[in-house]
Image 1 (cartoon, rainbow, N blue to C red):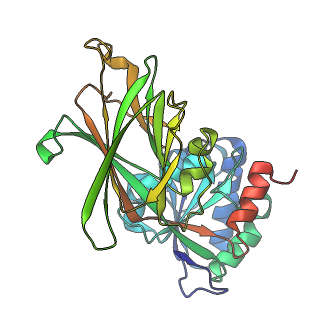
Image 2 (image 1 turned 45 degrees about the vertical axis):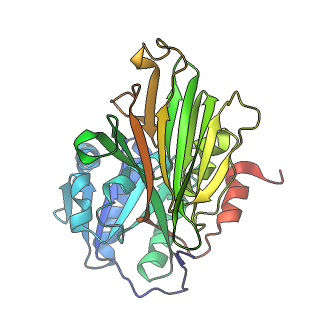
Length: 322
């Protein structure tokens, strides 16, 4: 649906950024290899995330063509981003690229599983030859935007917001949570409808198709192909036996709030937190707060090699048929 998978693409890259959250030796070595490759392969501008650039300076002598840059400037200056690390670094880079979702991100895997980072360092030169000649697949993925409000949902009450590639989650650190879930959607006639239910659980996960192979999968959710226009609602250890993961259209609007049965149930405000892509938000959820979640349909663009197959990737990473 959202994939562009021609054998040859007409989009060619000239301004290339390299990002890495960690500066381990093997990551720095790969960055050096890429820099040497671009220096000898053509007229490329290469931007390197500041901390990675510092690590390169410590080990190698950096050439004048390689420009140190803060990652929050990548979306203004490059036309391709190479992520060195695991899925966490891919998601980190993607959140910085939201202002320009047409810039592809390709991942070189240095993590444990690597659902999103399907290139390997051992054959990175061959992979780059193919990518720079136009042999690649683009996959546009939706992202989630979560907004925390003091009470009523209006701009004046906005406390904070975050974007997420994989998921947004609420979880209790100690207390069992009563989470009211309101879903607004449009029916086939374009009429806005809604329904509300309460789940009693340790928390809840709202995940994209991209995130369906992450935390949501571990909590018992289904695997969604990332091209499906859908998102997942997955309860975490629900105390209601009929509570099950639910798949809904991605143009739905979700509102989450906490419901207390007793006056002191949320007296310890430190017990309820919300996170985006596994990162805990510094503002905790209190009684009467509302967390809204909506989908940005064209949120991020991932680049894969031409032979990329989502189901084959699942088989390799999850271990199907072993």
